[in-house]
Length: 500
Image (cartoon, rainbow, N blue to C red; front, side, top):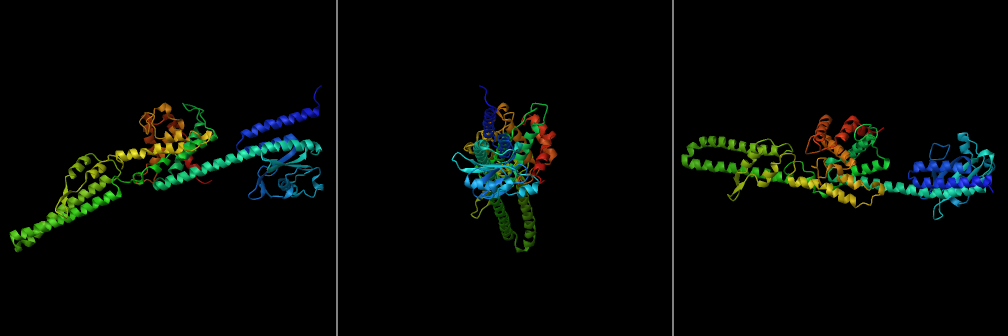
């Protein structure tokens, strides 16, 4: 015997509820989930429009931003209006004639020009049976009233919706937790090295902009490569946290602005002051000795001779100090300066005990002989160790499955395609494309940043020339660099940072 039309219709509606339950369980974005619930609710009970209110227990009110027919968020006190009463009592309210029921508030009808005839409002309950919100359907189509079957179907849909909304809200809370953690971590990085403040955020903006630009690229090795919203979030987190391991690097090494540390330079200056006093003392002794030999009448001539000699010796000492201060700057050591530093290592002065002391210590010669920058090989290795620290730190975090590659992406941001990078010197085919993008953006920002005490900012054009050279030599990805230039990634990233 064929099924009756009513039974077929009921089966179709139940099947629709099961289908939408599957769709709702897969949706984690609340802004997409709520309209989906309303659409299906209207379809199941054949209503003109629906509204969904979520219970905020802390504030004891209902809120909705998906009330059909309203563009603004609506908030209702607990117990107020029909939706508020359903949330408070947990009982279904089915009104066949709205204007004949004293509980109905016609204010919305008056302001919108809509005419409400029938109302069905049911609670949404979670797995524990607690009310978490309400669904309200207005105006049964065909001029009919909502019946017991509509109540049953809407309650079933509401139960499914409650679970899906709870999951979506939990997902939002987890996202806020991660966002808060990442933001706090960036604050910690920048507090450790204030001179690089803003670097992590700028690298993240540049890298995400480059990833988004790939989606519109139709030729080359990265044609039609695209990243989902979750993958972009993963990339942004990896970029924001790529330097977190710097918290494991000694602060004096991390912020070293010149080749000698401040206390080392102070010691050197003090030694030169002692050397000046020594020259003056030696000059006084020579004057006395000369008077004893040549007599008091020769004193004016002796003073003239010694003044000239002392002035010359002090000028030579000042010139040496000036040379050492020049070598101390984070510039490239000029050719021949290394040999002169070795010669200056032979200079000495006499201390208070008449013992000879070196004017320039071997450790100072070694530091001042650094050919480029301010770091010794040992210090540079310590700085480079921040990548290992970053990886170990990020690997301790229980990332969600969608974000599980954050440590891996951050780990490879200093690797080079030709195997000359650090810390692992891995080959190009093992370097993730996300890390390749971050490498370009990290270098660009480090070159153009104007807040580093140990270097001057490089102009945009020169920075691109340096990146182009590294791409041409096989260190950086040439395809990604071409997109970086063609898509004007720095300009796009800057535009994102600017207020609307």
